[in-house]
View 1 (cartoon, rainbow, N blue to C red):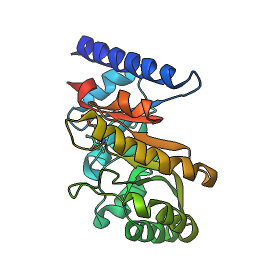
View 2 (cartoon, rainbow, N blue to C red):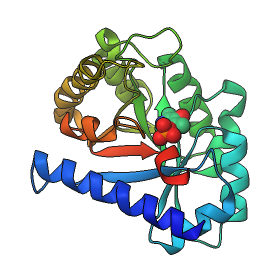
View 3 (cartoon, rainbow, N blue to C red):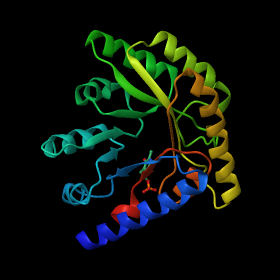
View 4 (spheres, rainbow, N blue to C red):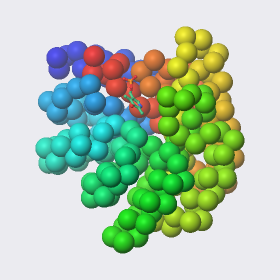
Length: 224
Ligand SMILES: *Cc1c(COP(=O)(O)O)cnc(C)c1O
């Protein structure tokens, strides 16, 4: 298994490298390894191979893993939908980045709890740029307004940029359109401090990087 993980990680890093150099030499892309299909042993193995940033899509699993692996200097990302009854738990965990802030309502609730605890949290606004009913996130049309509103009304949330999941499609062009739509929004938000454009998963991270992503969330291609 260790050899397999080593090979997978090398391959993903190599592909990221090719894609980012193609954009330009200074385009740096961060890899967040998504461990949801895997176990703690494999996360430890990846750590030994040099990987530091990991993502989970459930607060419960994030909590267990952060706890069991707390001896390792890992950087944890919450990437899944946050139920409002898990807000306090997430705040306790202090993830490096909450990537899936998906509505103004959630932002207001999160901000209130953060303020009560005198804490802050780094977050990305999730955009549903493919406009799919099955996905959470704000619509592309509303994204700029909601981003500005969160910045004004939620001083305990540090918005760092945007996150999006590519369109669920066999057609590369359709996926590309969804990434380009998110990137456009990210570009307009740069003047408001946006630094992170999180797009791309196992099946589309190279395309996402070509479209300007600077953070990819890769699970199955690494842990398979
Ligand atoms: C599971 C998940 C990923 C990783 O998915 P793969 O296709 O296995 O790479 C990335 N982002 C989010 C939000 C996820 O839930």
